[in-house]
Every structure is written in structure tokens, then in C-alpha cells.
Length: 168
Image (cartoon, rainbow, N blue to C red; front, side, top):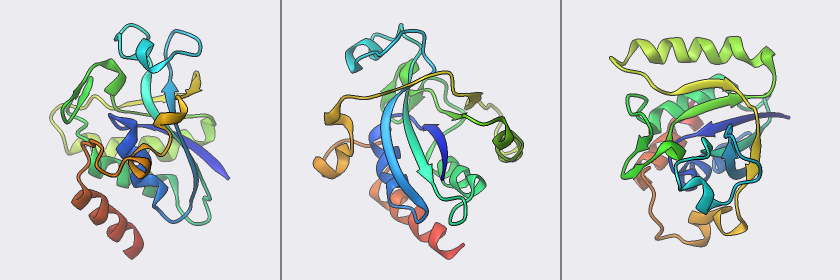
């Protein structure tokens, strides 16, 4: 199994999207790459911790590649926005991809280089993971627990990504 961390704005929708993809075996939402230890949601929302709302993705590389994961990721985020996705504004919503193993960087960098060519501005981070703290239990699998909950990724986008990934 391999692990990658995706900050796609609000972590609720990002988790729901990736939890449904074949090859993804586990997800956990939390706070990554900030300056404070073990922050709470309230701490992160102060815009002072540097943490990003992030989904820890555990996947089977024999079933889904990191390149395919990033392809899906870039379909549902706007990399031209800094500290924002949809109606969510603040540094905790900055998009990013964080990796644990330097051997993953070349593949990730190739996808980033391709994506960067498509945009006049590009703010999505690509960095090593410095820390990850699980979010409170009520945030875990939030949109399945609260089907009417807000998400900047529309149900139509989720369905389109899932269908596209199944075809590949």
C-alpha cells in the first residue's frame, strides 16, 4: 500500500470523491503541514496555524497510480485560486499534494508540470509531508453521515470523475 495526502479545499468532498475510487483502500481527513501541534478545527479556522484541510489517501498502486489520483484531483480543484476553493476561503483551503517518500516526487512532478501548462496562474502546492493530524471524528466520512452537507465538488462532478476513472 502507498499513501498520499491531498488538500483539495474543504476535505469533506475530497474524501468522498476518493473514497469511491477503485484502488483507494482507506481515507482519513485531517490537518497537514502546519506550524502547531495537534490543532483542532477551531484552531485551523483562525487562519494562523498554516495547516491545510487534507485527506490522507491509502491506495493500492497495483490498482490505481499516483498519476491517476492526481488526474482526478485536478479535475475537481481550481489550481488558479490561492487559499480558496468554491465558497471556502482561508489558508486552510489552499490546495496541495503532500508526499512521504521522495521516490514518488518524479511522477508527481510530471503531473504538476503538465497541469501548470494549462493555467496562467498556478498555486497548488507540491511538498513533502511535514505533519498530519487527524481531524475530529465528526469530520470523518462527513458527507456520508450528512448527505445534504455542503461541498464545493458537485455530485455531477463526483459522478463524472468516478465514471472517467472506471473507463481508464
